[in-house]
Amino acid sequence: MNQEEKIKFLEQVYRSEAKNMLHYTRSAMGNYSQAEDIVQTTFKITMEKIDDFVYSPNPIGWIKTTLKNEMKNRRREQEKWQKIIIDIEIDTIAYQDEYFSETFSHSVDPEALDLLSKIYIEGIPYLELANQMGISVSALKMRVYRAKEKIKRQSSPQ
Image 1 (cartoon, rainbow, N blue to C red):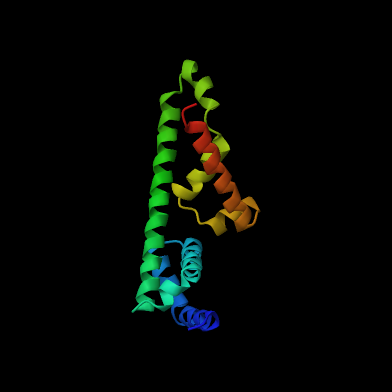
Image 2: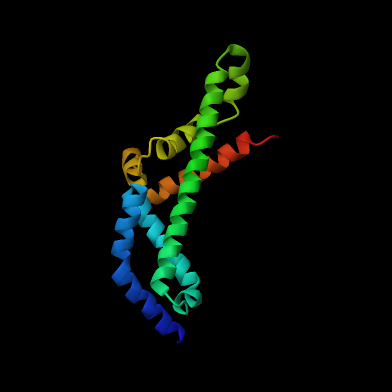
């Protein structure tokens, strides 16, 4: 099978399976925007590993397994950031007295923490939050990325 035939096969699978994959992912993750992103990522991974997909004894099973793995990765990522945010919020509450508050207030950017709390704790979908903020979803994703990086840098031991 040449590359063009492999891509056509993937397109056929996309047309026949993407909608079902999206519904499944949305019901499992509870968020349409996130479900779309996961399904897109699954097809991107499939395209990158097209030979594995095409020559698999069960290509539909292969792509569904890839989808489930991507969902697991997203859940792990969410749980990790929920824990980080909650730990930071607990530390903030614990250090409210005058002696510690000045030192701690400089260690974590409150805007970054607020943004990540809205996504990982409150569960606000990217599309809804982007609309609230008056920015595009891609701009919001970049802010989330920068917020994560900032918190990683600020909370790591110096």
